[in-house]
Length: 359
Image 1: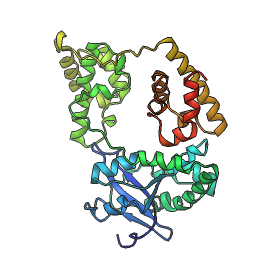
Image 2 (image 1 turned 45 degrees about the horizontal axis):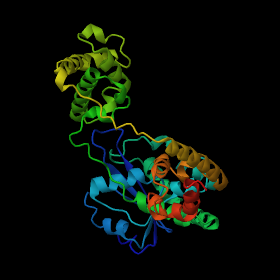
Image 3 (image 1 turned 90 degrees about the vertical axis):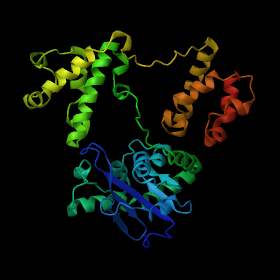
């Protein structure tokens, strides 16, 4: 790490293989300084102990674009923490940019067209093609100049501290372990299924996961979600019942048909008193005055966001507005606005207190 140690600014990105393997992993790390770009191959050098202190050093600013996935992946695979993060995508959001993807931002500001051919490539394959290496280098090559421009614009609008606080919070995100929770809890649409269908869906998801692990491919490459949803609802009992199911090709029927029928049978055999129930949060009841406060807050947010030229959800998300609407307006001001971030309290804390108290 001698070539990058001592640099006050590092542009960072990574490439993974989530579209190609059962257990995704970081396959390439790209770093750029104002003078050069370097690539680190964690598949060849799995011990990244020398990189960890650099990324954790609060004296070195690390520039990412859309850092959420990268921060989670670096910590999951290597235990690496990133401090003094600056996310150029977050910066673009706080400047009111309509398109904040890296390709769109680089095209607008630098006239550069990123080659998207390798966004879904299998980065675990070696050797890497020269074109893939070039693509990886280009991902971070302009981030330092982009950072300079964005910082200047944020300072001009008085918003740099807002972005720095958001990035500090972003640097703490971590990948959540599934643990022993049922598979159906992370299946879109499961919340609307009745218990027997959930039991069948769970067995189908377990079957898919087992096959994906055996073949070392992502689960969606075994059976798609729409196929599983239709199977859970139809609950086929024999091979002939699988005809016409969305996404079940002749090849998939031959490979997995018997396993699907067995999985459905296991779900159908779950005793009635052991059927799964999708967890429901208690329905939130708001008093009329709280509902009225929430509507006033949403109207205020729309007007304030338009004035600042940013998306309403960036200014204040729904969870914050709901918490504020349910706070006791007779409480001390510090208690009422405690759910707000520091930049929000400084920017509009007093304004919202007046609004909440009916001013």
